[in-house]
Length: 231
Length: 231
Image (cartoon, rainbow over all chains, first blue to last red; front, side):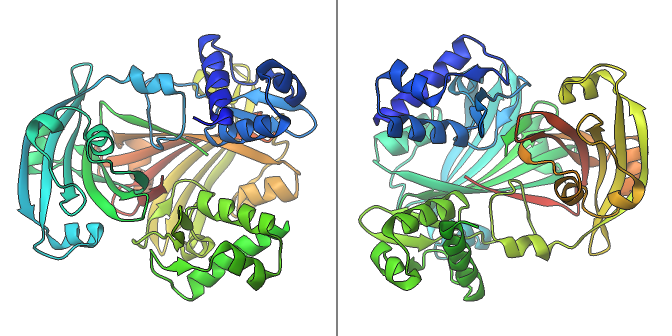
C-alpha cells in the first residue's frame, strides 16, 4: 500500500472509531503533515483520495471537514465510496441455486463482447442479509477469462476467487438500473407475489485491460434493499 | 476554465463526434503533449479528469483507451459522469404543480439540519421527457439559504437560478434509492394505477460549505426511466 493510501485509511478509521459527525473540522494540511510524519505532497494526495471516497470535503480558505452518510442500512452503489466498516455491516449469505455452462444468448454476447453460442458459466444465487432475501443473481462469466468455476466456489465470494486464484485484475464496471414487475422464477426465488416491484441492477465487470468478463442481472427484493450514492 | 479541463473537454468532444468505440487506443502522453501544445503535467491532469468521468481507462504499459457507455436512453446517476452530449439528449420539461411555504416535518428537518416547524419552500413538479412522464418531484428548500423562489422560476432549472441569481455554490449530494408501490397523489401524477412499482430517489444537496439546502423526493415512473452508473 502506498504511503498516502495508508494515511487515508488511518484518517478514515479515526473518523469511524471516534464517530465524528458530519461537519467536524479536521486538522489543517500542515498539522496533518506533523501528525503523520509525511510530506505535504503525500497529505494532498491523501485528501484527494478521501474526497473521492466522500469521507471528507474541503472548503477553500476554511478547512477540511468530515463528510459521512447519515442513514444506516443502505447498500453503497459504488464500491469505492463509503466507510469500509459499512461493508462488513452487511453480512451477505449466498445460496447457490446452480452453476451451469450455457450458450451465450444475444443479450449475453452483446454485453460480454463474445460470439453468439459461445459457452459461458451461468451462476444463479439467492443472496440474503440477516435472514432476509436481498436479491436473486443471474451472472454470466466469459470462459476465455474465467476458466473455471463451480458450486463450492460460488458459495463464497466469486470475485475473491477470481482475484486470488485466477489472478484476474478487476478494472471497472458499468451498472444499469431499472424497475420492473417480478415474473415467474424471479418471483419464486424472491418469495414475492407475481407483479411485485423489483429493482433490476445489470452490471458488467471489466478486467483492468478493458475486457468484459462478467455480466450480472441482480433482482433486488424491494422491501429488503435500499441504496446509497454520494455525488 | 483551467488548461487541463479545456484539453479534457476537447478530447471528450473528439471521442463523441468521431463516435470512437470502447477500447479505441488514444495517442500516448507524449503525443498528446505535442498535439495540444501543453506540458506533460497538464496532460496527466487531463487524463485523471477523463478517467474520473469514465471517458477513458488507462492500462499500464499499454496505453490510453476510450471508455463509453453502450446503452442509450439511460439517465446518469452521478452528474460528473458520462458525455455532456447525453445530458442535452434528455430534453426534460418541468410542469409546476405548485410552490408553497410549509412547516418542516421531522423528516425534512432531519435531512436539512433545520428546526422542526421552520418554514421551507416546497416545490412540486412533474418532469417529462419526450411527452412521457419521467417523475414527480417534491423538493424542500431551506429558506435560510434559498431566500426566494416562485412558480415561474420553478418552470426552468432551479439550480441554474440558485447558482446565477442567488450565488449559491453547490458542493455535493447524497442520494438514497429505494423501490416502493405507488400511493395516492404520486400515482395520480404519474398516471399509474395504485400499487405500481416506483423508484424513489431521495437527494440531499449541500452548498460547498457543507450546508444542506435542498431535500428532494423524486418518484420515477418505472416504465419511462432507467439509470446508469459507471464504477
